[in-house]
Image (cartoon, rainbow over the protein chains, first blue to last red):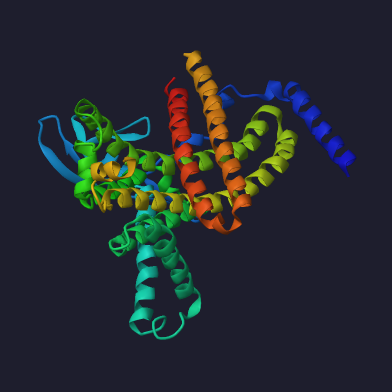
Length: 350
Length: 73
């Protein structure tokens, strides 16, 4: 068996080395460019890919013409915007002929998937709500796959994420947010695994918005102790207190920044890895011919299948990590110390 | 500049070394402590994932900078 495989791979290796000479004359100069567009697959688009073709999405611009008049214009798609005469296509980006875009409100593929996952969470939660209002799950056991699934996730977020990390008296207030953020990220990640779909979380703007939500909630739930730590660090000499203020302020910003980057980079790197490994087939096809492409596809397809299973796990894990870290940050800010630190130190060092 | 590509490649490698060292240490410590105290394995696993996530975050900062370097040139 091993012998056969080795012979097969040696043959393929030989073919991959020898075929360029055979096909070199047929090579087209124009085909020199990479046959796959790696960054294009993770970028945001003005159309929605479906199994039946592309659906072009509306473009909405708040823009300024050359006279300096700002106006809000909506077009049914990019082509209509260009056909209107005030916009032109510059390297695939719709830009005004004169003037500039102030805010681009266009509905893009990532936004659609963000809304889709929000809708999915809404339907999921409202379904469970209906069941609980009827008394199923309160007076009796939860019924059906959907309600049981809801209960698994909800109890997990409440008991494993919120309760251990946030102050016991306050944690119930944050469970709805944590549950929503977990489900939305999980849905977005899993929608991204569909063959034609876009991963909304592989976009820094989407993850940044989620991180800003966590940041705002964290700051609004900050207690006196939290702000005391930021502006007047307890238990250090006076000079160091002033030194700690900028450090603590930077610390406030880096937490949501790291949250956004972590989710974004994880989802994007997974996507790029899969595209790159599958793209090897097409690159080999271009460079060394069809036989080499078939050879590479054995390796590529198997590796991609394994990567997809890993990505399914990573989708849920990253949603969990985002939620867990949000809970930890909120818990750190909402924590109020039982006794003040100086008093505590004096008591315990004596 | 071609050197930007070189820097991006080397940087990605160094980032991977750092992250591997960090996560390896966490894994070793976590498995050791689970072996010593199997009843606390749930808590230890949670702490392990949390710490690994922090290290991963730092590693990803590096990786993103490498990607930006490679795409900029």
